[in-house]
Length: 84
Image 1 (cartoon, one colour):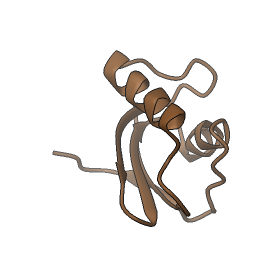
Image 2: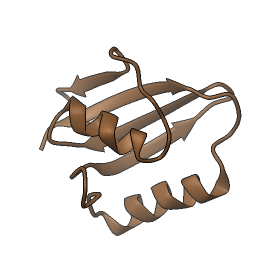
Image 3: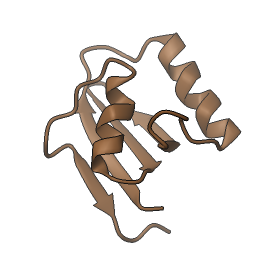
């Protein structure tokens, strides 16, 4: 399955419930049943969030984030061709 990296601006740290949802998904190694997106990593800085996911396509990455209340812009998702 293709890998994608996305970036989104954040006004404040992610809420604990959202971080738990992401962490639980990563630990379980299972894809979200609705979007088929599997979260691999989440990194957060003071004003930015970054995710690396396995996903069928960029549209699924957008839907996955929208399910958590995060609206990604058109250029916020990039397919990753090489990961080591």
